[in-house]
Length: 163
Image 1: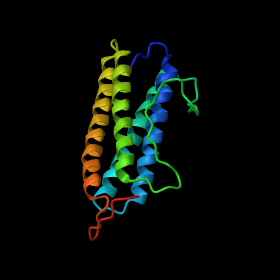
Image 2: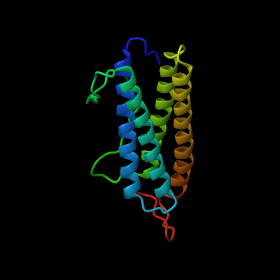
Image 3: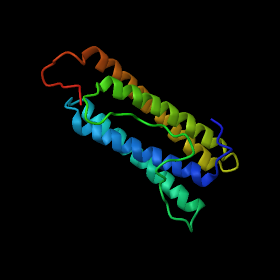
Image 4: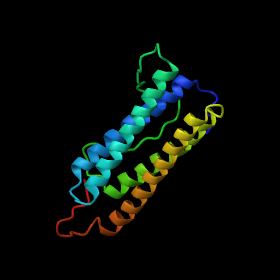
């Protein structure tokens, strides 16, 4: 992903927006699933995205101390998005597929973002670390999606996989 056509403010705000959206959707999914093994994982992912948001907000304030953080409704930078249709029962496997795509896109976005900071290795390495965490999230969703595809239509005592 080539981020050279965007300014740093737009890039950081896009990162913040992406983290907020991921945090919120994972929190929402964690509230709706009844699977006692899956619920804490989703809650953990939501908390991870919240920590990422805090990092990017702190970073924004460092780079733009006189500016207020205003999250745009729509950002010019293509950011990952997780789709969850409102009002319909979306299979959890489909939600996880969208989450996988968003986590992969977040990884790619952050790896491209890290390239901007060649002269600031601490920032660059932190962003790369966050990118690698996003791929960890991808792998977790990949495993859970495989499980969901196997067991979505089965009723297993004590386990409900759907939202």
